[in-house]
Image 1 (tube, rainbow, N blue to C red):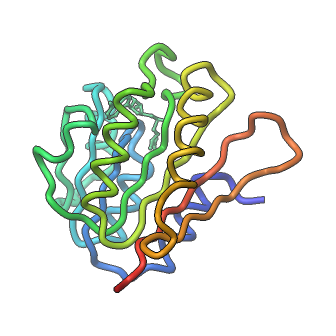
Image 2 (cartoon, rainbow, N blue to C red):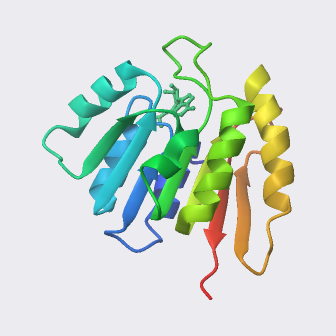
Length: 175
Ligand code: SAM
């Protein structure tokens, strides 16, 4: 089975190249770097300065990325439209676990992202910790209610492991 992150990267390669990407949770920068290689331009958000520093190092000479020290719930102050987005929720494994995505701001950010996305939004959900469990309950319920005439919503999930992380792919249908 592919890791959740590898699965997301593989799925992204089924979408056209050279579009606008957004990494809503930069962290150590692995998703940002992947998007920078695949997309023409990338916006990446994190609330931790360390995330921006690490990502900047990983990006090396790449200059098609805007690193934004702000919460993804404020995305509409920076972006009006994008094509491919990734939320990799939760906390950085080797950092302070108290700095985690939170239900309230995740809700705001996902709603704003769905209002601006043109192709696809990926959400990696981690129900194995307290805040992640709350996020998972809301996200599961919310995405199931998205209009199937406008959105294809699918999931990649290990079914025989309790509270395993999973991916939700929300693809915008073309009209
Ligand atoms: N995509 C990352 C990578 O490739 O390493 C991993 C992301 S990590 C699981 C989650 C990140 O979300 C943390 O770095 C955390 O600081 C960040 N975060 C938490 N709340 C946030 C918010 N409101 N807006 C943006 N980032 C946030």
